[in-house]
Image 1: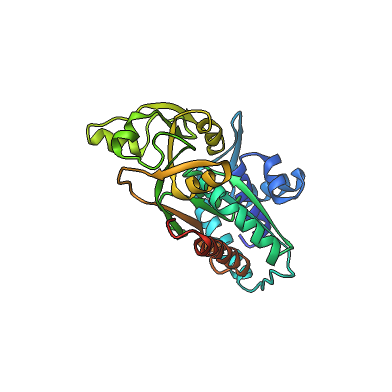
Image 2: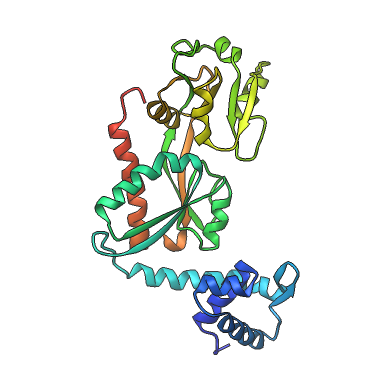
Length: 306
């Protein structure tokens, strides 16, 4: 085993994640022949095929699966050891960060964060990748994003989490809506509603809560994206209940009205999750600090009733 080097381990990691030589080469920024040569060396060293070509891609053998975790742990340890010693000067250094954000997190965080980074870190380039609730954890494991943010599940044991903000729920509607200014439960139930659901689910937390109380709202439409809601509300009497920061921001931007939701709902916790291997990296720590600072700035600028 003395012939194994870090490069071979990185090839193993890439092929395991991508299940294809071409994609593994692109991920590592090397040629396909270099990946194939490294895989051949690994096969000789382990006396095993490691990956078998199938119609569904390169499938790992039992041996490959048995060494996957220790290989990942070894690479994480090496990356962490190297990264801790790398200084980071946001005013002068260049860096690329990729965030996996839900649509909610992107709308709440991205505009102010991007503006902030442009001012204090002109060499930093930020990419935002859309993720659904659990997708971000997989992308962190695959090394495709630096962190994920949204209303998230519990982090995996090798990940860390921090709360960015806690949000209430509010109900959005058109200006001049009969419910504006007096949204009690009876009025809330008297008008049709829009539900935003990327999966197309026809019931949300509100519907389950109402059902437990023997009540039901009229869910007239389900849409996949928050961005279409203002246009729909502006020309109808529909209501849409969403996180309060979104509601107030959309109301201000599109000339809509809003009111507190007349149902006691659990506050939403918008959090971020990242891999332990990046916890002490100077650049990553700085990025997390910027997310916290962005939220702090928004809180200091918000009206008292938000």
